[in-house]
Length: 404
Image 1 (tube, rainbow, N blue to C red):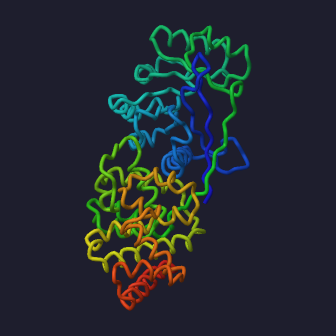
Image 2: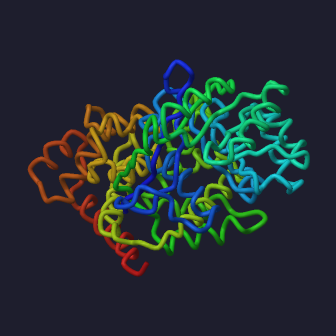
Image 3: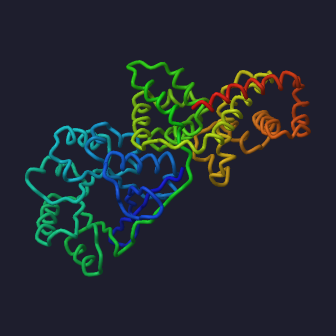
């Protein structure tokens, strides 16, 4: 499934890029917003930027401006992203809701930068205006409104961002008003970005939805569902690897990832995937292959005394074979997105050691390269009959995915 989004640079007065605003795009043909549901559009932007794409490839060392609806603010969705890289944009038509203001106050206390989007000052907005760090002034509004808002911002020491600048005279005018940042077609139109990304299978997603809706879900049940869905596994690892969580210890199992994440964030993560309206299943065959590889890697590990105790780690390695088969980018670069143990990375990169041997044996056996499989299997004195029985059991288990 192709994922799309656009970014538009925000410049400081020295014409250096301060940040990028990340914008919703529904396809690769139209570089403009054509959505009608703000919740869904923002969910697409967040999941695509942080879980479908590599956000650092999109924004570099800059910050990301993302517009959040009142509903998503009240759900605490921005808290899934580090305040070091996120600027939370709030639309003017969300400002009268006291619950939204309370949510913004909490974000402010947590260190987030708040930007008030398309803002025209009015006394009724004073409570949220006090919380705002940056005020985005729309230069397509009447000049009187622009100047009144700029006057109040200067008086209250608010940072001003002039948006929708379309020519040199507007740019000079913005600087005279005291705007610190500028944005608009005069500098750059939004750049469309896309990537082929796998999507969770609908049946698996529905099961996860049911599980996390329970007041006290069984983590083992959640692990079981994610363990058969490569897309969820990859997105979970990208989330864990975000700057917010700052994982020091590398992840070796799915259950460990869920413990780090916590149930509350898991629910919000699932909610975001749901907002994306996951309905496509055109990667079923590739996903089934990765599940087969995962199961077989675990079975092979259980046949090797030195690997048996870490069989779940071998399963996670096999599940991420999608990264190898999917051709996401240079493999080593792709794996940097995931907070995996070095053993798992070495296995997928085939750098030697037991993890590498198990991954190669799985690959060779599945592809029928018996001579290469035997060469490695002999090092561990593996019983060929036991390996064959293990593989057939894995095939039967992975074939259940055909019913999804």
